[in-house]
Amino acid sequence: MPTTRTQRRELRELADSVRGPVLGPGDGGYDEARRVWNGAVDRRPAAIARCTGTADVVAAVSFARREGLLTAVRGGGHNVAGNAVCDDGLVVDLSLMRGVRVDPEQRTARAQGGTTWGEFDRETQLFSLATTGGIVSTTGIAGLTLGGGIGWLGRSYGTTCDNLLSADVVTADGETVRASRDDNPDLFWGLRGGGGNFGVVTSFEYRLHEVGPMVLAGAVFHPLSRARDVLEFFREITETAPEQLSLVVSFPAAPTAPFLPPEVHGTRVAALGVCHCGSVEDAEAAVSPLRAFGPPLADVIQPTPYTAVQTMFDARFPHGRHNYWKSSYLRELTDEAIDVLVDHVARTPSAETTSYVWHLGGAYTRPPENTAFGHRDVLFDFAALAGWLEPDRADEHIGWTRDFWSAMRPHATSGVYVNNLGAEGDDRARAAYQPEIYNRLARLKRKYDPDNFFRLNQNIRPPA
Ligand SMILES: Cc1cc2nc3c(=O)[nH]c(=O)nc-3n(C[C@H](O)[C@H](O)[C@H](O)COP(=O)(O)OP(=O)(O)OC[C@H]3O[C@@H](n4cnc5c(N)ncnc54)[C@H](O)[C@@H]3O)c2cc1C
View (cartoon, rainbow, N blue to C red):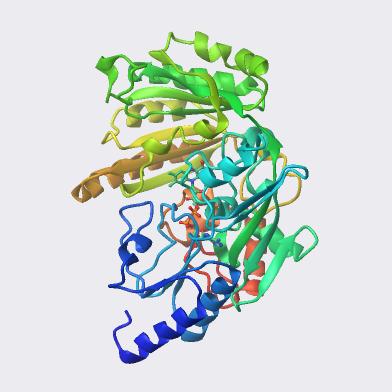
């Protein structure tokens, strides 16, 4: 904390070298700026440098380096682990850097490192273009892209990082470098899946695809008593689903919505969420088995603006709630895994808590180039997502999540999607990668960040 006169002088020095505001404890806006999506994370940095451009990032990184400060980098601030903030150290905060420029002719977009998916989609959809992005609009493009990126368009167009064309990076020694297929290709490989280990990315350039403005999307809802049938149906339909069709089965508390019978409001349901990014005729044919199965409690699959699809889950994942997640990949959805899902979903501890199985495959398995994204030979991503409002209910929620995850373990692979990890330690970060990818990432870390300056992330330690 900047309590001594020397520390206060140093902070003034930082403030002089950064164009954006530098906030310390007691400053207006400090509490707002230190808050992240996960309300269970409550850290008090010594200073938050709210950067307005690459020069500010260089100044902040150089200052932290010189002063030996623990340094966190904040993009969208959404990560469940809360690595975007730290106690006592410096936060290099990119959340004022949200510019997006679309080149509709080249079908590319460049976006600054603090941009959220809602902001990105708004600009690209002006031209009916999009790239694979997160399914909650307030998630940052930065953390999501650097860890891989799974979303409604992924089965057609691959992970978000498969669509990354270049990145501007500030390295641990305060240098600015560009990473692309032709510039620093080793770094470019590592940025596509290796997380925030190699530097601060101040801007990302993406390949875009023709999507929308309308797509067929929504969900069908079934009573929880049919959870097993729904999971078996999900397994069957994902075997033949066209690549333009993305499916997720989840077990939320039913929203208080007019399309659902009032007696199910607030009760747990089995929902099949869907988005088809192709033509309406193809989409109707692809979703017809979903409409026929059941009958469902409600069928709200309809032509929807793509930007609305990208906010469909926002209300389910509000800022500030306490959260604890655990996740694994599955290679198949076995009968035994379905038993575990049915059992644990029935004991979900609160309305704010949910769980899902997300269908992968398709273009996720065919990257246009070799990247550091960890596991492509899997078919499903499973996650138990506990959320709660009362801080004293943490144990109950964390206990349910851990039990659920442990029971799924024998039916899952040992791998995990790096962006779903909480603060689970080095072994779990390692599990996010195939061993050869992990070892290559570690060598890259030694080259670009040998002192492990960027360590508030799913950390890849530089080998001695
Ligand atoms: C509600 C919710 C929905 C989600 N939905 C999806 C989804 O649909 N698909 C999906 O793939 N993932 C999803 N995720 C996971 C998401 O990808 C990660 O939480 C991701 O880290 C969020 O990025 P961020 O920039 O918002 O995070 P932050 O918390 O800001 O950062 C996460 C990590 O990335 C580092 N970092 C952030 N910005 C930069 C930067 N500019 N340069 C270098 N390092 C940086 C941080 O230091 C930190 O280690 C979701 C998460 C939540 C909470």
